[in-house]
Length: 445
Ligand SMILES: [Zn+2]
Image 1: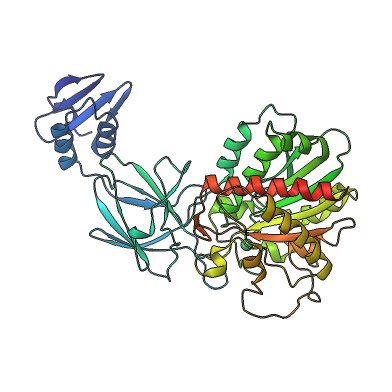
Image 2: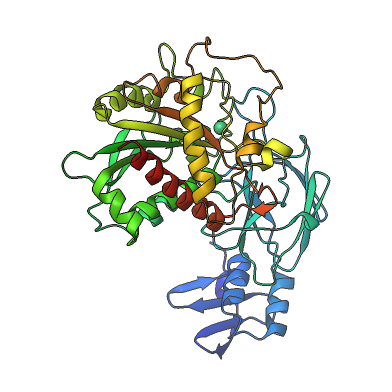
């Protein structure tokens, strides 16, 4: 055993409620409670306790114990490949994994960059959205857009605060199981919201199904919402929160819903993809939203196909499948119901709903029927796909007896006709959707 550690003669000084030991020989330690910290850990702790450590002494500690820059994605939703770090420039790219073709989801964490300004340069296309990256300084709980000013081509720059410890950057405002749990906690004792298990994923995770509204006795109507058929499309999750808030709210609408409607929501159809930080979109051999025809390969899709026809009992009136589109371009920056070519009768009923939505909406994100109608298809083709096999959720669900219509709704990642899409504005759009739901269901009576 080395005797080194035993021969130091530390000078102890009491700096507030911590003790700093300094051996006068460029070695130091901080004792807080039962912890004795050296090196990087000590510097990080000294920063946390910076009101008790003089700035000059903190700088000394930092000089002797440089904190190394680490970039990782080792947490739920994380996704990044770091290629190299050269000076203050980090070269990285989104991890495509089993994605067919190019996609744009990424989500990474930076530690040990306090006080530095770093440039993050993407090397596989430009996967940065139109309001720059979303940034979180609280471990992914809340997010804000950094802004387009920070972006140059496929790179963005960020000035880390002097006390920055853990800063996350993401294509959008990441929404994971932990976020759903936080939301559900608000309603823990509410008899009008219950959480059940739809199934387990291939990796053993629980796929939740939420039931909200009238949960005792027969509801007059049922409605189904599905989210994250494509794992990365997180902004739609905030819209779902908004719909649930409206159903559970102490308002006239809320009371009406709790008397007349049972809503089922599947918040993470591709739960493994969401938690693993996959793109999910265009997953090989096909993604979750292309798994509804024939023998389904994903447990959650099998469970949906098994459960929903039974649960409906002829009362499932409509279903909405919530998505996010691409990251830039006219139709990627517009709230869109892109199914006009698919099913004439379905489309006419959807139009009734959409006119109601346009009429009752009150939030900052505005749905414009005319803009939505001008859309034909993502590839510009105007072929009517009615005769194609019903591979997608929305095509499949409308084959259930009693269903009036089903549709996909596309919530842009960052910009909706000039308005910023955020957790808050997306929730407000969820409230608007709920208002339209009530109007539509009342019109059936
Ligand atoms: Zn999608």
